[in-house]
Image (cartoon, rainbow, N blue to C red; front, side, top):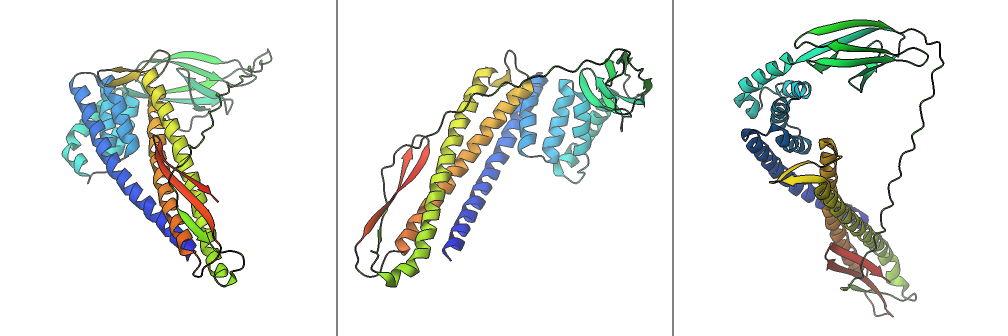
Length: 351
């Protein structure tokens, strides 16, 4: 019964937290879309794009998918825009798609007019195909490669064969088909250099601060066997809940510290100009987005840790109270202490 009660409390806390988080995410999505549209109307589609990408990551709906496709097309990424616009139009009954169907359809046609396709056949099977420095598959290609209409650098290579390099013009709305057969190399292929990844610096250990408030629970002495049997199950459950509270709050503190670190990395490495986050020197836009995502994820999970820890602490205190003896006996004091700190709530058991 006690364990089922703990599970019910945890499930209830999780449901409440997820509902609150969903409302917060929906508000954040609308704020991101509004900010992105404001920048697009100001004639700066590049800085607007990260706002639509973040909205799409928070809620992958037909609305956010279509908005992202329009932003990508305006920023000069027709291949990505074509994929998202086509996906958005797959939800014809969505209110936002019904309202803006004509605009989305015209944007999709524009994106496709700026895209060409490249198909390659040849030998040997399994040879790597690299287009503009990006791996695009192996021979024979299972599907055409979609590319922006321009001249692209094509490399086809395989161990033991002389690589094939070629500049290929790609025309919008057309498909270019090539057949490439590599010739065996007389010179043995050199082994690629071994790259040793740089180890990340270890994270500093997180130590929970001391606690102040306490809940005192009386336990019967060993001679009182009449009530010890019935209360032992509740006390065991109380110990488990108390330990879970300490672990959950400790995780919340660690994630809160990680969130602050990621926030500092994001603000320090991504230039902030009039509220617009862009990549700083030596960073790409994707790297800035990854730092922003890590910051927000750690922040949300730290809140979950605090809420779960508080619920488990209350449950543990109740179970200790319920397991108290009904007859006078020698008492031993158990303290489950919880106190607010600058980083959240901290709980510690002293027995």
